[in-house]
Length: 267
Image 1 (cartoon, rainbow, N blue to C red):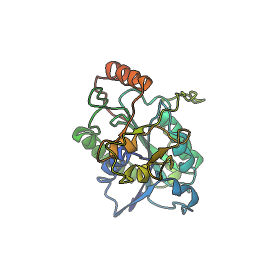
Image 2: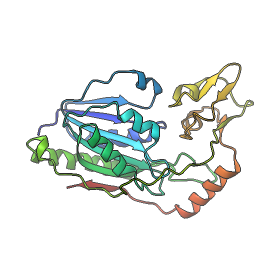
Image 3: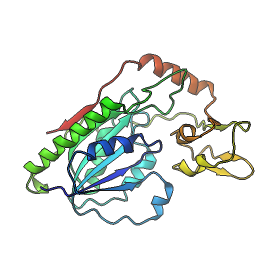
Image 4: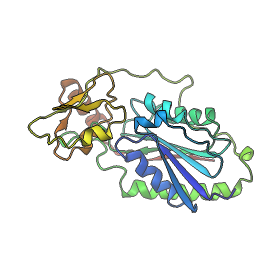
């Protein structure tokens, strides 16, 4: 199969997953690369035309071993029409658990034909100067592996004549999926002494949990702790200050400090 178009479809609040997908797509050799950004909530009210040609790369971060609920809902708006797909889960150096198999099964349900997959490492949402968690990843080494995967996908697709020739993609994970781990809703807070009301946090929030009046207001129930607001705030006014989150950070920084490498699945 000749791949002329690669479509990147991703839920990427902090931009990490998007960066990985762009690295993969860059070496496939397609004439055009298109983006379907599923991060912003307005995507839920938009009609997305069915994808009928080329290759699709689906990507999402891993939250506690699963694809975020919000990401799953938005992937369900895609229609594959037997288009080949690559599934990518990006996790913060702990484990990806059932996230990759969950994304593979979403792809199948939406009519795609998974041909390859990968579990990449990205900077953890809870990282801080005191407790770094996969800080700076994906780094240059990770992106080089992403580019190598793109080349392998290009070779693989040339070996395939039609979508029905694509074998089933086997990836690790549990069926049924593990239950989601629920933690207390603890959204980031705004330090009023640092906030300049630039509203960057409002614009990057994937669930519209942040609004503004005379001050920044965060809806606790809507926050998914992606920390996009924390990472994008130009004055460091958005912060998570909570003893439980601090304990999680310390535990992760101690138990998951050894560098994990990417895992690729391509038959």
